View 1: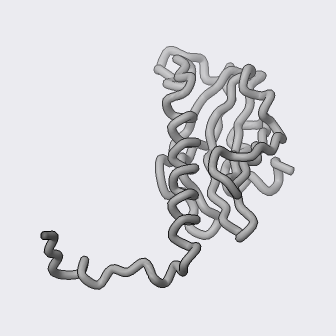
View 2: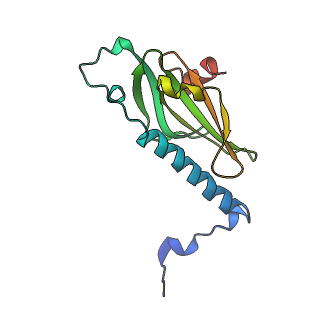
View 3: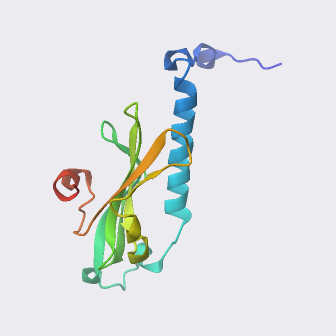
Length: 149
């Protein structure tokens, strides 16, 4: 038998509504899948930027693994480096009810086929929109509206 005491007893999922819980769980699952791909995908030496690298040969990008417009970066704010000719990217994960989270990172030349590309996500009802830019920190929240269309 499970016994809960203290604040956990009062937790309730009712305010999310009948359809809110599955939608929230799908959104979290989708965000985790995208972050896993970005973080554990192609890890390249240039993204680790050791001291010996000439920094003027690299594009500097804003990296955040989970961000909302309202709250800003919630997980993993950082800077990444990618060779010149590559791009900075922000992925928008959206659905029709207004849910929107973002993932920002560096994109290699090989990954640039995704730039300005919209695709259905593995979770029904969500889609992923890629935005790329090519200037230092152009995917930073302060610069994003000016540099990404």
